Image (cartoon, rainbow, N blue to C red; front, side):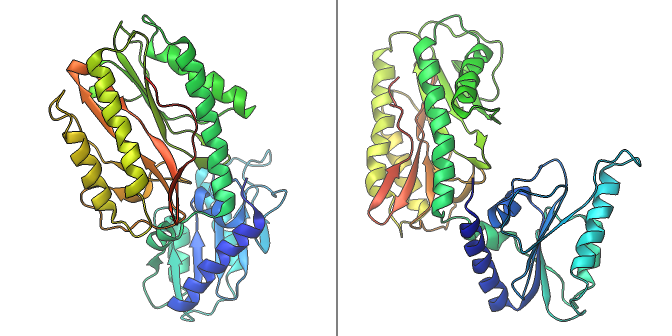
Length: 374
């Protein structure tokens, strides 16, 4: 779980931006952003608001009183009630009323307002727009940049979810066999995660064997693994609010010579990453170097069709993007998922090996530990 003192320090970074941009009020409504600043894991199926005023006062409006939070004030709306019918509309109306009551002391035209455009509902947005003569700004791009460099409590949270995936890889590698369906393998993976976490886990990812891996993957199906085929397990679960994104490729048979050669070539990308992943490195250049290396594999033709990697944290896919069109520069403190791969019918599937690296001043440190063997 996130540390409340760290949440308050993140609030101070937001407040510094507000002072620089002369913002009177910032209103956030994404459950993930609210967790980032308040330390409260709210129900993502319900609406919530975290508001920061230029005075430094942080307000959390949510559906139940949290055990603890980094907010200066918490207001709670009724939501479910035996006394009256309720719906998403009534819940939104009640929450919006609380927020408006809490910020009513801000004089109209006192300063600019910034909102998370993607999450603030229309009714609340309309009221908040009346507080300023200027069009409210979208704070999301600023938050995306702020979240790139991870704090210590975030790294700890990412390590915790990585440990679940390491356990899942160990479980499925020990028992994967021809004839097993993709969903049976998925069940083994999920059970291992739950046993490690001691609770349910929100698991997303690619579970693709044989030719399905060449076409991009997706959820598990009833397809049965055939002798000699490869199975890609690309796992990005959520645990305690944070995510990792890790991939291993396993075979239920003795690997062919071509598969071993392709595996060794993909694995070499991670050795290259030790030199490429440096603070100050252009993300585009990292992609170009990894792609050029993969393209030099002579065993298959035109075998790569995706980016080389990306950032992660509250989401499985965050900035920076290791992609040809990226203009981003890598920063110390980012967590990068590097995911080189080769895919072709001759391989009886695809080989993708993905590790998560914490980018330090001297280079990357892997956060996962499970071997990348086939």
